[in-house]
Length: 98
Image (cartoon, rainbow, N blue to C red; front, top):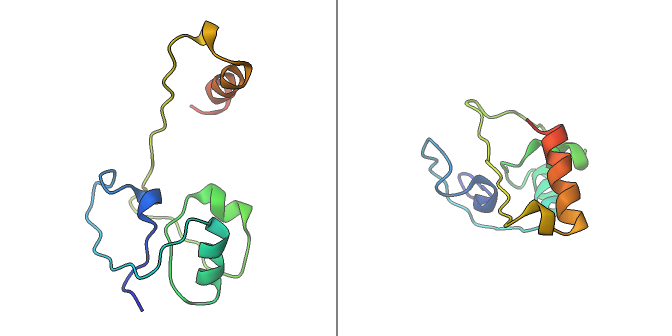
């Protein structure tokens, strides 16, 4: 079994302020598969809180200390020329995320 199974796509190799030593033996793209594996005691995972809330189960969820986070960005030439979905998403993010 690996020392620490981490979804590097979720963490980002260059986004952490600290170094994590790990040896991943398995990689899953599906969050449900990751949580099922953890639930059956076959590994651990570092996942965003929203994923944990979406798939409740029989596993122990803990917050990272210190916290890890990602910065999301949207690149768009002109809000006036953006499609309706893009305008909706930008409006939603401005209203609901600080």
